[in-house]
Length: 141
Image (cartoon, rainbow, N blue to C red; front, side):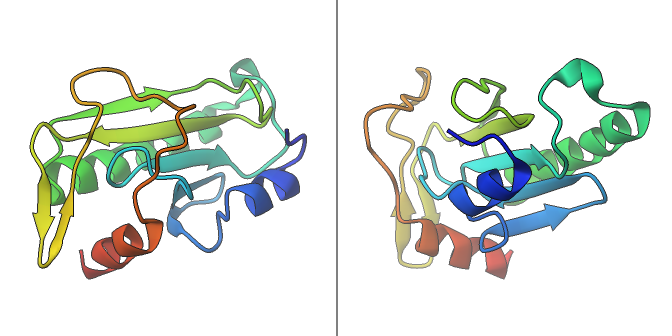
């Protein structure tokens, strides 16, 4: 369980797997890849409830969603995207993002499957794809 941005940043290796950042939000790969290219959107301040976001933070959140949808739909050809705001264990405002793929994702010698499609992602089963392979693929995009 994390109770601060610093703890959350360390737990999810936000700086190691950062894909996008603006003044208030970071988009990073999840260290545990449930579906190919699973991500996290996280606030960069100690805010614990959505109602405490100000209008500028909400505006920038829209910018982060646009980044995710542009790369997921346009570059990776995801079929759907699931955004989850659970905040059950980690209190900082954040969203788990799961691009969903009906078919196996092929890139060079890599084949990545969304083993849950079309059902909900199981966050508790311990399954994870290789994050470093996914990070390397994204760097090429």
